[in-house]
Each structure stands twice: as C-alpha cells, then as structure tokens.
Length: 478
Ligand code: 4AD
Ligand code: MG
Image 1 (cartoon, helix red, strand yellow):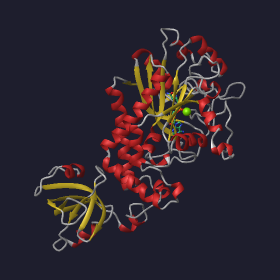
Image 2 (tube, helix red, strand yellow; image 1 turned 45 degrees about the vertical axis):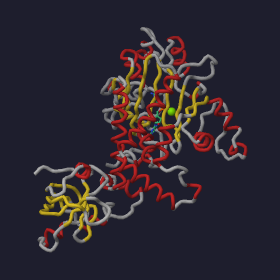
Image 3 (tube, helix red, strand yellow; image 1 turned 135 degrees about the horizontal axis):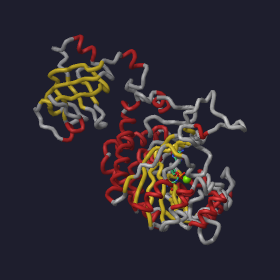
Image 4 (spheres, helix red, strand yellow; image 1 turned 90 degrees about the horizontal axis):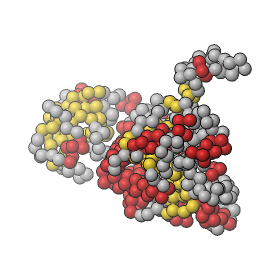
C-alpha cells in the first residue's frame, strides 16, 4: 500500500477509505496517538483499539517512536480535528526508549531555545523548528521563483576564492599545507605558492564581483550561495557561515536598484503569507503568547502576521545618509544623550541608530543611500560631490540591516584610483578592472542576508534559530 503524507491527507480525503500513514509519535494518551510526518505542522490523530491489541506492541508506541499505520479515515469524534484514523494495523518502524526520550527535547513540553540549539540534531522534530525550516525552504523557493519569472540567470559564484571581494580582512583560509611543517620562504613566512592552488585562498565573503562579470554579459543575474565571515561578532544577527542572494543588473542605476530590492522583499513576504499559512499561524500565536509574559515596553507593537502584511503593502522610506544624520541629531535619544555611540557625519551608523530610525522615527523599512565613501567598499560608484558613494542599505524593524548594495563604479580610471586608495593591488583585481575596459556600462546590485530575511518572516529573534546548523565563534557542532 502506498503511503499518504499527512499534508496530502488533511487537504483531501474520502471518508471510509483505508490509508497508510508513516510518521513519529508526537504525543499519546490512552487510545489516541498524534502522529506527525514533517509534511505539515498538523498532526493526524490515530485511534487504537487498545482492548484487542497485542500488549507488547502497545508498549512500544511511545513518544518519538516511528510508526506505520494502516487504518480507515473517519470523521473525528473529538474537537480540534476534522478527521482521524481508525487503526486497523500498526507496525513500529523505530522504537524510542521513554527513559532516553525524557532526557531530550523530544519530551513534549516547553523547552527554551538554548536547549533546543544544543540538540540541533533533534530540533527538526519540534513544532517550532519544523515551522521555521519549512518556511526557510519556502523563502528560498520564492527567491528563485522571483528571479526566474523575471528573466534573471542564476550564477554559481565560487566558494573558494583567491580574491577578497569586500577588501576586509575577515576571511577563513583554505589550505592543505601541513600546519606543523609548512614550506617557508627565505624570510621565514609561509610560502603559499606551494599551497594547493599555488596562492593564498579563502572562503568567499561575497559572490558579487563574479556576479558583476556575468551581469556585464548576461544582463540580469543573481547568486544564491553560502558566504563566510570570520568576524568575531557574537550577536543574535551574525553567523560565520550564512547564505546570501546577490542580484546584479546591467544598465540599472541606484534608483532601479532600490525599486528592485523593495519589490523583491515585498514579494517574498507575500509569497510566505500565501503559501505557509499554517506554519505562520503557529509562529504568530506563539509570539503573541510569549509577548503576554513580557512587560509592555518589550512587546511587539504588531504581531508577526501584521508585520508581514505591513511590509507587503507599504512603500519603504528612502532618505540619504546625510539626512539620516540630521534626523538622528534632532532626535530625543540624541538630545538626552541616550545613544552610546556618537552621531557624526562620516562615521558608520550603529545598530542603536538604525533601530531608532526604523522602529521609532518611521516605523517602516528604511532605505538609506549615499553614504560617505570612506565607510563603504571600493567598488561603489562615486557621487559628484566627491564625498559620498551611490550605496544603499535597507533596514528592517527588529532586524537592522537586511540588504547592502550599491550602483557600481563603471568608470575605469575612477575605479583604478579607488583600488589604489583601498590598497587593492592592480595585479589582483585585473580581471575585475578588465570589465571596465570592454564596453563598460552603469550597473547595480545588492546582497540580501538570507537568514536575516528568514528571521523577519518567522519572527525568530536569534539568527541561530533560522539556520539548521549555525556556525558562530567557538561553535561548529554537528
Ligand atoms: O552588506 P554586505 O556586507 O554586502 C555585501 O557583501 C555586498 N557584496 C552585497 C552586494 O552588493 N552584492 O552583506 C549583505 C547582507 C547584509 O545586509 C546582511 O543582511 C547580511 O548580508 N550579512 C550577514 N548575515 C548574517 N551574518 C553575517 N555575519 C552577515 N554579514 C552580512
Ligand atoms: Mg553591509
């Protein structure tokens, strides 16, 4: 008999038909066993005929055990579900010792997120993480669909790279030299020319530079891959390994770039609302319940579902960095000296400033543009004022920066000059510079932090809880 998935069964069934269900026991109470197979957050209730059942078999039907059940679909007698299964036969596919289960998060009760993280190998089985990872899948699919439907090509940028795209010294080295006995140069330093690739190589921090090469031939492209940053940021918004989506479009300027990013983010929110209703409702209700336990000041002003709808339906606020500095300097927290970090033209905005703009001043996603050149990457296009570049950051409520991007410097001479200012050797950036020699055109792109997007659509507040196996300083378990 072929297996029916629970999601399928709940969405279309015929009363009286016999089906085969396979899944894990979530909970059981006397004759009632709740089974989940991961296809949906919803369980199916199986009703056992305990009077006639083999005692030894019955004993094995415990929380977390895996069952194959054949039975008849009947209208449910109890409340909470439309149908249930009148069990005809049960096979225990995998037993789960209750003593062992009690030591784990499989025990059906509330566990805190830290404990769940320590048992990341089991947390897929919880309602919460089932919901989060089904939505993570959906967001990923929505992203590919968005670009595919609009004629973009998916480019696989390299994971091992010999270049440092962002010009930042925060990369993980890739090497197969013997760490105890590396080949040395005369001056005593490691001779990387003896290494696997004949040069120093690292894990990529971004696929942007490669995406630009592709865009300058194929027009509209995007990357979607893992990126790695060895910054020692132990925050709820940073991972050492995270996924990034980087569209890059020939002939686009900064305004086109903003329009694309805004349309794209709103599309993803809509997609999840339309396709993940059950999981979203679960997450929404969970958040509302948690909020009730918190002091009013710490509660969400809008519930998760309203936040998604709000982003999907409303235009983002757009202002320049220079305007933002003015707004901040006129703000209450600035005047009352509540900000920890200075607000000064030329310094990077700190998360307290970004949060003030998004959560207090505008109460909307904000796109900040035209940052000082000195605090942004070398490849951003210089503005005519000589001080700022055509950069854009998108800030989201509860998240902070979700997107970073810019119009790119397409003028060869200006780019060469920038490389010099940023100490990027011409010999290393030759291939990037080359694209500005053969039919250069204005172009623009951005990078969306995938996990930050998943945080926003699930309402999870720690980035470690939206990726199956988080990589953070001192943590690479599983
Ligand atoms: O602003 P970033 O550094 O931009 C770039 O890498 C550009 N090359 C993008 C481009 O223009 N094509 O990173 C982009 C986004 C950030 O806005 C943030 O959402 C996310 O990536 N991000 C991180 N997410 C999780 N953990 C980290 N350590 C992150 N660093 C950046
Ligand atoms: Mg950034």
